[in-house]
Amino acid sequence: MSQKRQDVEICPALPNPVTTLTYEFPHHFEIAPHVHPEHQLIYASRGVMTVRIDAGAWFVPPQRAVLIPARTAHAITMHGEVSMRTLYLKPRLMRLAQCSVVSVSPLLRELILHACTFASLRRRVKSEAHLIDMILDQLRAVQVAPLQLIHPVDPRAARIASMLSNDPSDARSLDELCVRAGASKRTIERIFLAETRMSLGQWRQQLRLVRSLPLLAAGEKITRVALECGYSTPSAFIAMFRKMLGTTPRQYFGYAR
Image (cartoon, rainbow, N blue to C red; front, side, top):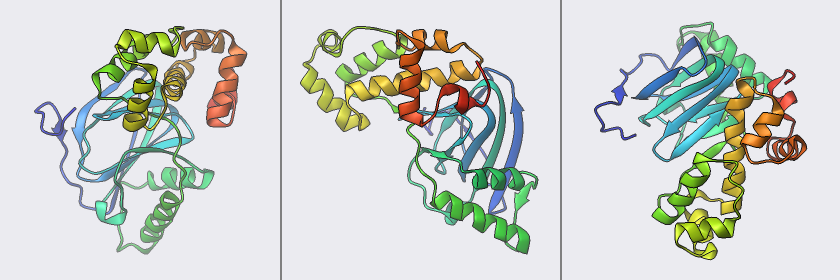
């Protein structure tokens, strides 16, 4: 998805330091590739979103938000019914070099929801200026969450990424996958570390985690999600989920499966 492609919509610049958008989306709704002149904070109080850019995909469940730098082409897919809350931030308000999924604290959540009761926030209105500063303070302190999946470019590593993406439950060993890709495991591991900052094993686990989120958001049973994501038992899947996100799927999404 390149910013120079004609099918990427170029959105007009917005006049105020912060502009908000509140929208409800149905399951599987897709927002076509587009570019904003502003930084963008996208938060869903309900549902899961997949944000795709050239470099990979970012997965945004409840309790998380994605920060997208200005002039970055991106597309969004909804999983489950999504309540989206978006803040468009003038680039002068903060430095933002790359996309990232960040944890949303209870305070930041309330600030986002409160901001979205306004169409925009202006510096010349004292109460709105205070709200802008509080949001920026919270964004400077947020923790990056491990919910991105960067795809390797090297053809050998890309073949493995494609095989696993097509079937996250693929049970073949890493050695077998490397043989199919036409390179040694050592070579593939070096490529994955250089291009994704993860080992092949870590990338595979990350793929399984992020693939589970849309399924859980859509209401699938944990047993089915575990099997589709390559885990032989629900307990093994739950253990991985807890290790990666610090809680169980049931607690994370806030209701029983």
